Length: 180
Image (cartoon, rainbow, N blue to C red; front, top):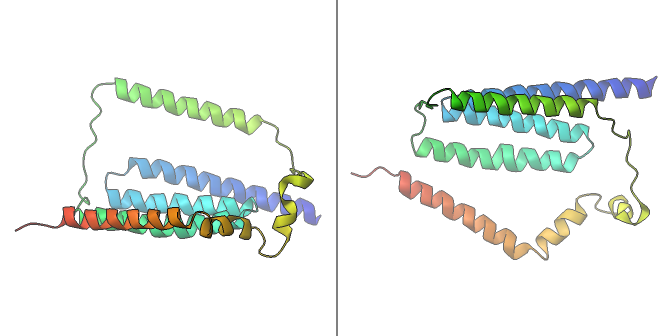
């Protein structure tokens, strides 16, 4: 009985967060204000983090919230506010060709989703013995195999990326500063 309840619980919440993510993404692309669009994108990112947690990938879910919904969106909103892009701009699709193309792409995506919904996936995936499952069970859990190379072998690339982002923010501040 408990296994059946867990299956229904996870299935219900998986579809709930999936539907909220899709609806939020649709609202995100239909907003004229960049600030409102960014806030809807944060909602999409939180729903994706919840889906990761339901798929038993808690580390990826936490990184999704911290990095994307937290840091990247704050930087994005900071730049939008700094450059004064809060005014609504009209997107002009000339003629019916753009609308027909968008409708065709939307119908294609709906067809893909319906095909994937009917596909049969295995209930549980077994890891082979040589896949590193022992490392995940050891001290540090699943985080250690990701964090160790990042902060040992790739530390220089990690720091250079952070400096590049800092330079981009400073450049946005200089460009957005009002003259006179």
